[in-house]
Length: 300
Image 1 (tube, helix red, strand yellow):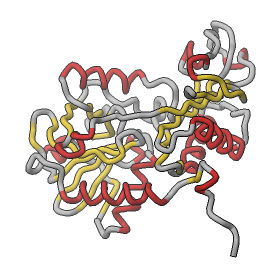
Image 2 (cartoon, one colour; image 1 turned 90 degrees about the vertical axis):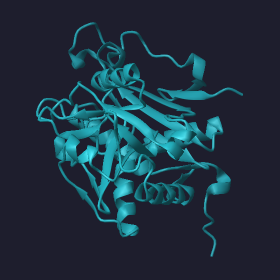
Image 3 (cartoon, one colour; image 1 turned 60 degrees about the vertical axis):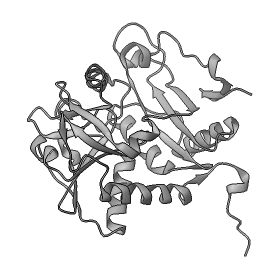
Image 4 (spheres, rainbow, N blue to C red; image 1 turned 90 degrees about the horizontal axis):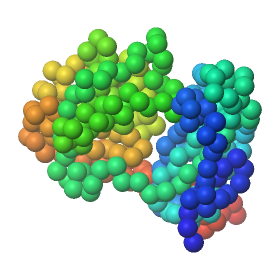
């Protein structure tokens, strides 16, 4: 059987999952989304992802036509119907069908789509040898213009940075704030390690507050690795002992070259490797069970 998608309360074959050409998500990028992972039949941090989805919707005044609990149930059921024990989930909520004008009042009921499929952002060898990155000329939109903490359907800035990475023949692109501070990458949060301490940009710079990013900060505490949210520049990246990226698709990906400069000894570092091992152990036991055999017994 092929994969199915959830579209406005119905489960349809993925190739038949469609929305209207007049949907404002398609016309204007007016909507929000999430990226969630399934590991061995368990959805990792479903509640945190759903909370962030609803926070994004609140900021853009988009009323999702499902309660949080109904959304979680819909996500779990979509994964279950696809039968995938390791997968990527993409819940999407758009403003809905309207006219060719901008006015969201012309839109009816918001469109809700949930897609479940496989994903592999980077090849396996990238985790063994490390990634190469450049610094994109495309800057992050500052939070006083449009807060990047809203995970909206308009990712054009990130896509432009990704095009720069493609043209340079590298795997990712680092994006700076308009003031020149390191913010994040086109699809990932960024961390550096120096003298045993881990540092990542703070949310107020205008980054997406990643669920995987937060899990890594928690892991640092459990592994007694000092970790801080702190503003830093490319100089700090170039002179770091280690650099790594985090994200739903990337998990924890080591970076060994930035703008042609070797980071550390040019190999994934010990802190990165410890955190990657800890993260994989965490995802092997934490998460919302999808399949009946995964549901813990209430007996006793």
